[in-house]
Length: 219
Ligand SMILES: Nc1ncnc2c1ncn2[C@@H]1O[C@H](COP(=O)(O)OP(=O)(O)OP(=O)(O)O)[C@@H](O)[C@H]1O
Ligand SMILES: [Mg+2]
Image (cartoon, rainbow, N blue to C red; front, side, top):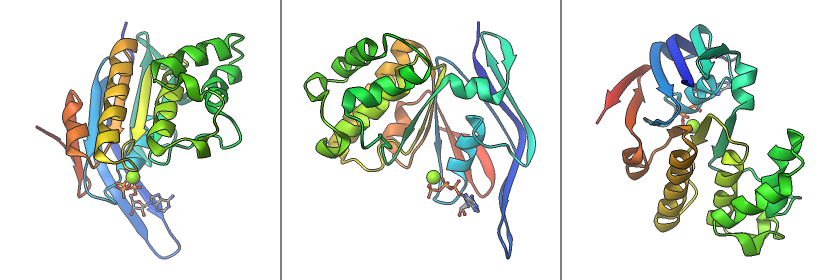
């Protein structure tokens, strides 16, 4: 059975005190579990906003967003509960150690085996010996490996990543990208990535360019 996200005729804008910022109009696209989609485009084009809409974090000004899990229509809240998120700035909880950060999404869902599962993921991302280290004691690349594991730890249907390698050097970017795509492939979940990196975008199954309010498939 399929897990899908369908955007149809999406428009979005932000109103500020002095003006309306029109981001896009009449955008449509579909993505599904098992597929990796990259969204590229110039700064300010609205990529992060589009990602938030696709993840059900933000409601678009116009158009419809349709989420299905196992072929059944679900609401944004349900889709969010079945999604993982990776950000440019890692966003780990500073007061929790590595294993605590990994266990948190599981604990929030009442999983009694949270720490055992977290330990397995820590090993999977090669940071078993850093379990008791807090984020400030880890390098950027190590923090992002933890963040990738955290996104996948509760078996999501989709993982959304906004500039996941934006703060990393080239070598570290490649290893984090590899980890992210390996995790997605192994778990069969969908991956939606916003990136400025051509290398990262080329790893995806499909690429969409968001520019001047339009979305188009590119090679
Ligand atoms: N909450 C908000 N209120 C007002 N304007 C906003 C808000 N969020 C985003 N914007 C504006 O909408 C536009 C698109 O922002 P968005 O963050 O989606 O772009 P982006 O393509 O992700 O850019 P970047 O590549 O720099 O991250 C920008 O002009 C931004 O200033
Ligand atoms: Mg952005």
